[in-house]
Each structure stands twice: as C-alpha cells, then as structure tokens.
Image (cartoon, rainbow, N blue to C red):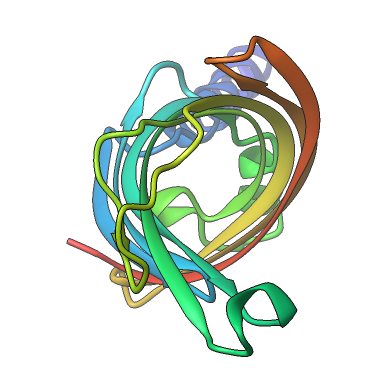
Length: 184
C-alpha cells in the first residue's frame, strides 16, 4: 500500500510540473502603439509557437539634419516603413522559474527584423523630397517589459544588411532601439 501511495504522490508531482511547463507561452495576440526618439509605430504580435511570435509593424521613422548643406536650418522628414519580425522569446521558462512576470511577452528575445521603406510619401519640411526604396534584414537581440498590462518598454540592438532596390546595392546597417508604448 505504501508503494502505491508513493507512486500516486510521484504522479501528482509530475502532473503539476507538466501543467506549469505547458502554461509558459507567448501571448496569442498583442496590439499596441510605441514611440521613441526617432518616430512612432503601431504593432500587432501573434503567437506562432509557445516561444515564437510574429510581429507586424507600421510606423513613421523620423529623420533630422542640420548643417552646412541646409544653410544651418533644421530639416525633418517622417518616412513610412513596414516591418515583419519573427521573435523567439528564449527567457520565458527561466523567468517563470524565478517567479518573474511574462505577461504580454515580457522577456529577452532574438528577432530577424525585415523592414521595407517604400517611396510612396514623405512628410517633410523640404518640398519634393523622396526616399530611396530599401529593404533591411537585421538580426537583433532585445528586451521587452510590460507594466500594469498596458505600459511597455522595449530595447534592442542589431547589425544587418540593407538592399537599395533601385540600384541593387547592399550596405551594412545597424539598429539601436529604445521605445515606450501602450498595449490595448
């Protein structure tokens, strides 16, 4: 009888452990807006697997310049862009083991950012300005933190390649991200 009791207790621990592991997952969907030093963006993130999410984003990047070539005037441009980025949130299980929150995909991630700059329109202080149509591929590492289920902070860094579509020219590009936002 003791052996059966020990076996049942052992099975109950295994069952509880299995339930905790299965509950560690990225969110099904996250919708929000973000702003940073150089623009503002709207995003939608959806679950692909328990640790991988796909993020879609539309935003306006801010470009500034001032100097000799602008007669010492400050010029700006808001440039539209589209982003598609799979993200692997690799720290979720470790955060749960340490009793840290993971709601709204709080944690460290690795992503492959694919960004497209179309030459459709530009909001600028200069008339008749255009953008070089380009496509960026940037592997990056980042961190996402959400407070009170709505306020978010995101940071990241990556170095990748950029393709100028009209001239078929590849160049190196980098990204340093600091954003705050609101999740709906």
